[in-house]
Image 1 (tube, rainbow, N blue to C red):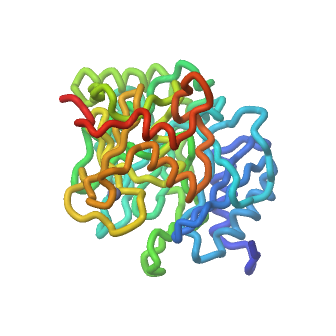
Image 2: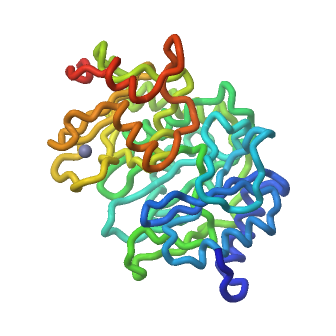
Image 3: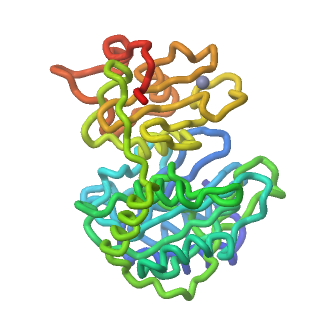
Length: 361
Ligand SMILES: [Zn+2]
């Protein structure tokens, strides 16, 4: 990592955002992600000055697509590195002990201008009916990160994945989508850095806070639960259907599909009950046609994979995970359920996978 030039206005933006979002001395994970898909650099900092320097160094490198930081507080035994290193494991949901912010991520399709407050005003008006105030809004490039202050232990909190899925079901249209794939545990792009999604420098955009002076009171869990209850009553929380017996592989009790997708950079395009349409993570030709060509299936107990691309038709979840781990490193969070002895992902495909209709209607 190299250092270029003097402290910039962008760096001021990072320091301002830090003072709003993080407590001094709190452990904050930073992840640096390349457009090329090579493994990210990851570090956890409790020293703010070292964090700012690492972020500024990373941001000076044009090949970097985005720089993120965690929003929530990791377990006290999480390893503090105070330096960015390649090939390190990242925080997962199970590593979080305290939720500092509730995070909803808005995005829009390529070809539209960057979003601003007006684009999400109708969503925020709906939330305001439940006493939820204006969030801290971060322009994340084309999209918007919205943050509401929390500050509670994550046990027994409302289901924020259900919230994001339900808001997506209610509000997604051709102009905005609520990202149901983002892991709220992994965090946001860092204000004061650049979002460089494509190779075209003309399309790169600064990440910045739109409303740094907004008040950010703690929003009680009860207000969020009321939103989720209302969305469920209106049919926006899709209940899970059942996977047919024999399809996919049993997963560990704490398996989190959003975390799994985030860890392997698998983009979730749409959710239909227990079917998650994704961008196929396997190498080879890009798949044309319908978005439902490639899917993960997850009903809470089992995980399955189906890709209709002719080269991938025989790919089981066990083989897929083997390929992902070979290419991107081991998935550290809970994944497959243990059988009587140590289970290997290679075994899973043979013993659990059957070519059956993957789900029941
Ligand atoms: Zn495929």
